[in-house]
Structures are given as C-alpha cells and as structure tokens.
Image (cartoon, rainbow, N blue to C red; front, top):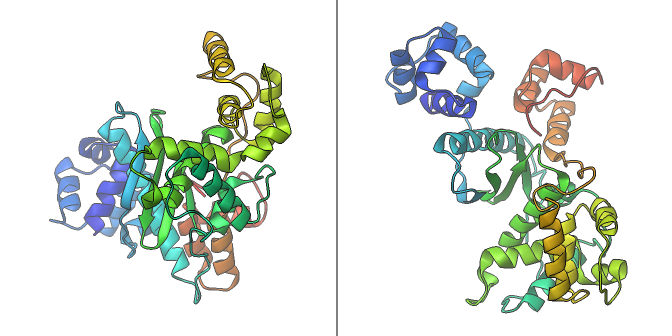
Length: 355
C-alpha cells in the first residue's frame, strides 16, 4: 500500500523514478523497490520523499484507499500518459481525503444523490431532454433564474465536486466517476467559471440521463443539450432575448454570460435551441466569432472560477466537534499545520492545495 502511494505521489509530481531519487537524495533502485513493495523506506527516507514530493509523511501512511468506478474522462486524444497520470493521482488523493473525512462523522454529512422521480424514465427526443433539465431545477427548487454557484448547488444535492490544477497541458476537459455511492465530478481549478459550470452541468447530465436515453440519441450531445437547458432553461432564454430575434449583439451576449455564468457561444446555442434565432442567424454568429477569434477566447473579462466549499466546511465541522486534531485537519486540507493555523486565524493567503 505504501509503495502504491509513493508511486502515485511521484506521478502527481510528474517525476520519473530517477528524478525523484535525485530530489530525495536516494538511489533510483531504492525508489523502485519502495514502489514495488520489495522494501520499506526508513523514517528518514520517508521524510525525504515527502519533502521531494511536496506532501506530508502522513500521506504515505493513510489507511483509506479508493478506486474511481466507471470513470468517464473528457480529454483531448493528444494528452500524454504522464499528464493523465498526474491528474488521476491528484484526483485519487482528494477523493481519499474526502472519503476518510466523511467516515469520521457518526451520521452521513453528505446528502445522497438521487434523480427526481419527475424526470422522464425514457428520453427519446431533444424536447424530453429540455423537460428533464426543467424537472431537475424544479425538484431542486432553483426556479428559472441564474444559479449563483453551481458547485455549491451540486454539493448540496450529494455530488462531490473537485478541482484539479494538475492540468498543465490544457487538454483535460473534465471527469465524472463514482466512489461507492458518491458521484464525483472534476473540473480544472484555473478554468474560467463558464467552462467549469458547463462541464459540471454536462457531467450532471450523464448522471441524470444515463440509461434513460433512447438508441437514436448520442449521449455526449444529449448531455451538452442537458447542460445548456439546466443552466439556461428555455423560458429564461425567451425572457432574456424575446421570442424571436433577427440578430444578437455580442455585447448583449457578454452581459448575459456574466449574469448566468454561461459562455457567449452557449447563449447562441440556447437561442437556436429555443427557436429564438434561425439556423442561418446562428451560422452568421459562428462565422463572426471565428473571424474575431472568439471561439477560442471570448472578449472581455472571463467569468471568475468557482471553488467547491463542502470539503473545507466538513473539515472545520469535524475540528470544532473534536472529531479530529488540528494536525489531522491540516493533513486533510493538504497544507502545513502552521499555514492551517494562520487560515483559522484569518491570517495570510488560503494556501490549501485543493478544495
């Protein structure tokens, strides 16, 4: 188990065995033996490994082990195995800490995710996807207005939302998986908020639609439609844009982007989905966006990224109820004890690795 943790931490750091050996002032042979379970590092070696890998020694001794079940990556085909390994290692570390934390509470502190009974059991058309998105919003009492924080909304309903900063290649587009009964959604921590939100809503679509989709519907396209409909329901599109438009002004789309946390391009799609604009108008807007380079980077200030808050709240809850020590709380937060104490005292930067 310790060998697997050393290997995972090395992958998360993006290091080869030789590079780790040089940083930790150990031999590459020793690293290989540690990872294969043929030898166990001494306390001194463990401290060296922790320093070289930017982690705490407790990480190597953590008893909780988890596996991501049914992982569904959204990634570019060109992403390297090394980069993917970094992302996977980072996610597994966060999930392990989450599972370990939840297990400390006498009663489950996280709601169980359930698809509302009002969602159609069989979905054969795009109109039914729109209906499913509306049913989710109504069951969750969200109305038709903008969702202030989608991460908070999903966490309140039993999803585990994680962010990763291990995506240096920008070729990772999200992940959905399960850990036991917990559905997990992962987005990039540095992504603009509109990209995060659409990805979270898309992954929610997988959970909601799943086996409900008819054979004529492509699941990825269906989840994209669900994401748009969940973030901006059809009645909202018509309320904001009117029932029919011959043209959409980019400045108008930019304002709506920041009000709803949905990209300008997504608003164009939603306007076409709701038949507010024709396909011809949509095509003209696509050409405009392409000509100005806005399909890669939209104009104006980006939507601020979201930060999941549930994990930290649970850590502080457990600390306040004396279920864990300050040292354990710092370990779960992935930060030094001194930095955690400063955070408790509202001093200095946040400093936590994730969550």
